[in-house]
Length: 417
Ligand code: AMP
Ligand code: GLY
Image (cartoon, rainbow, N blue to C red):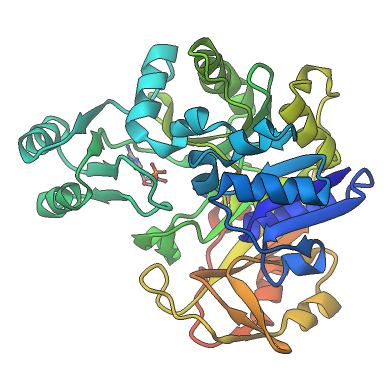
C-alpha cells in the first residue's frame, strides 16, 4: 500500500512511524512533513489547505490512501477533494468536520443525538454574553466558535477577563463549568461502524500543576489506571455511536477519526469538545500501544469496511509523551534554535523511548526549532512509572536553548498504578 500523510506535526510523525512499521505499507509519503518525519517517509512540499494540490500530489504519487492529519485542511474540504479524485481518504468531509470547526454546530448535533455535554448558549453580542455569564456564574467558560488551535477557550473566575475574551472572539459559546478529570477517547469510524481506541489523558496547561495558559497540549499518557473499566463501552454507547449516527442521518456521514474530549464529572461523563482528527499529543501514546498494523485500519475506515475488521490488538504497556516546547510558547514562540542530543536518544534510549518531531526543520547539518511545540518525547514501559522514567531520561539528553517542558506528566496517575 502506498500511503500519503498530510501534515507536519508530532501527530503526523507518530502516524508515519506506525505506518512505516506496517508490513503492508510499501511506500510512505508525507507532505509537507518535518525533519523527523523525513527519516521514515519521503517528504513533498504542498499547501495542505489546497484540496486540488493535495489530490494532485496523491495522484502523481500513486497513493492508495491519503491520511489527513490536522483539522484545518479537513475543515477546508481537503478530504472531499481527494475522494473526488477517486482516492480513498482517511478524514471527514468539510461538512462533517464542522463537528470540530464550529462549537455551535457540535452543540446542535449533541442536542439532536442526546449526547451529554455542558449546557451552553451561543452569544453574538455583549448583552447575550452578560446574560449567559450571569446564568452560569463563575468559573466562566467562554469559547471562540471557530478553530483556534486549542487556544480559543478561556476558563476564568474573573468576569472582566471572560467579557474581554468574548469581545475579542465575536461569536462565542458560553457554557457551564465542568468539574472532574478529562479524558480523550478516539474512535475510528467509517460513518457507520465505530471502533474506539484506548483512552488517554493530555495536559493542556503550560506549567506544572496545571498552571499557566492553555496550550495545544504539553504531554499525555495511556492507559488511565484511575478510570472506570466500563468507560470506553459507556462512551461508545452514549457519545460516539449516537454522534456518528446523527451525522449520517443528516446526510453528512463522518468518516475518519472522531475525538471525544470528555470530563468525568460527579454527574457522569460530559463531552467538552469534539475534534475531527487524531489529537496531539494523545496520538503519540495511543499509537505506541496499538499492535494491529495501522494502515489496514485507516483504509477500512476510508473504504467503509470497518465492520469486517477483526478486533484491534493492544499492548499492555503504558506510554508517556512529554512535549518539549520552544522559548515563550504558547505566546509568540522563538524559532531557529539548534536542537542537540537527538542522536544520543537514538543510541541510549531506543527502542523504548524515541523522539517525534513537531516544529522542526533541517538547517544544513543541524536540526532547528520551527514552531511552538518542537518535540514530543515518547516512551513505553511495563507501567506508567517505567514509561515516565524513560521519557524523562530521553528529555534530559535534549538540548534546545530556552526550551520548556512539564516535569509532572503522568506523575499522579503513575502513583495510582
Ligand atoms: P476545548 O478547546 O473545548 O477542548 O477547551 C480547552 C480546555 O478548556 C479543555 O480541555 C478544558 O480543560 C477547558 N474547558 C473547556 N470547556 C470546559 C468546561 N465546560 N468546563 C471546564 N473546563 C472546560
Ligand atoms: N490534545 C488536544 C488536541 O489535539 O486538540
